[in-house]
Image (cartoon, rainbow, N blue to C red; front, top):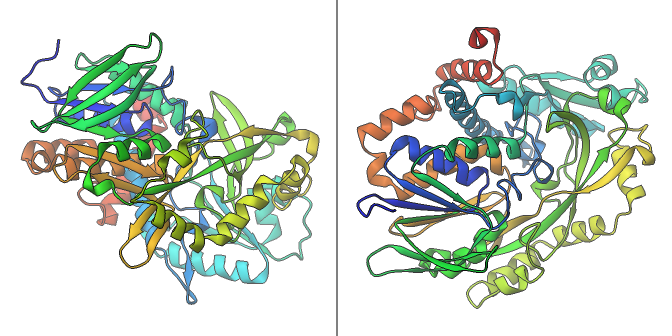
Amino acid sequence: MRQKDKKHITLIGAGIMSATLGILLNELNPEFEIEFFERMDQVAAESSDAWNNAGTGHSAFCELNYTPEINGQIDISKAVKIATQFEMSKSFWAYLVSKRFIENPESFINNIPHISFVWGEENVDFLRRRAHLMQAHPLFSEMRFSNHHDVLLEWMPLVMQSRKPDEVFAATKMDIGTDVNFGNLTRVLFNYLESLPNVTLHLNHELRDLEKLENGQWRLKVKDELNGVKKYIDTDFVFLGAGGGSLPLLDKSDIEEAKGYGGFPVSGEWLVCNNPEVIEQHAAKVYGKASVGAPPMSVPHLDTRMIDGKKELLFGPFAGFSTKFLKHGSYFDLPMSIEFDNVIPMLQAGWDNIELTKYLILQVSMSHEEKVEALKEYYPEAKLEDWDIKIAGQRVQVIKDDPEKGGVLEFGTELVCSADGSLAALLGASPGASTSVKAMLDVLKKCFTNEMNTDAWKQKLATMIPIYSNSTDYNKFIFQRRLNNNLLHLDDELKS
């Protein structure tokens, strides 16, 4: 029975974002009553699932799209930002391990080197200059650059074993890269959340509508999909963390801040290796340069993954197009999202992104054989029979109404909050799950402003995420990173 004097929190979606926000809120105020509503029959079934997610701990070590070259100058500012945000995530996970809320971090995070690989004089020159800039920054000081065949053969045998030494290629390597199974992490977090007396998880429950009440609360119309029963829940705060499903729900909220937003869905496929001998020869995440017009989620990589305790080897993802906003969504999602206030921005964004449209058409039309031919740029000896196709996740890129540019297609994440802080929605994709802790801290800053300014919350956050308040003091930052890595990989000292 709900106590009327306690603040009630409702989180829609049972993925990594909602799980992270739920634990943060509970740690900051255990008196909050927290309810989760998930339309699927299990947690982490959509964007957070291992097969629906890149699995890279996005640290900007190897992702070349985070260091664009503009007018001959390489800009590493986005790389620094993303690396910092991922370290906040690791810092929080390390706290959860230290408190024994997480028992076996190896079930979701493992050390996998991150490598950037390019070929051709122009690309090699870019990578060399990029490495020089990044090595000068404390976050990337351990980065190594090489254009020597023997060194690269040691780093990535599958990629180099049939290439001639006189070919022009180069790579950078960061040994402290990580592979993250965000599906397993989400399940671990919910295992802990469900043990708490003030937390309730409702599976097979779909939010159908919501409206703001005169008393400042939200009334949610939720359907129990198992028995068809509709429920009405009154709540003080709503977080829409339903992946691609957040956009139509945000539109139903009718808040002023949601006007003008649209979405462009992008699907994906992996090539998955079925040959154990090939899988064992590769132990890295090798990222290349994206094709012209490609969305960030489609940056090609030959990727060692640990999924459910098994080593896997993937290549891709190959982008596709579907009108669904979720992998298990409806083909009517896109047409139903078009309304008077967003139709112009969506048309404008479509016109301004013709290259993306061409790229998607090309990708959708690729056969299995053509996908393996694309793989051969990274693994020249690849054989068709060693690789199967597996459907990846569904993402919705944000389209927003810009006062100057009109409709703009955004490739990052977008946080939309009501003016009174009673509702927040997270839209978009890359870099997504890796920056879940920073994204949820932003929710707290915008929607729990008064509480975030109290000494109690500040002190608690400093305990949970030591680098949150000093993320530009890189000496402390690097020290904390070493502690986090030790804790997450359960070194001998921790085990004892």
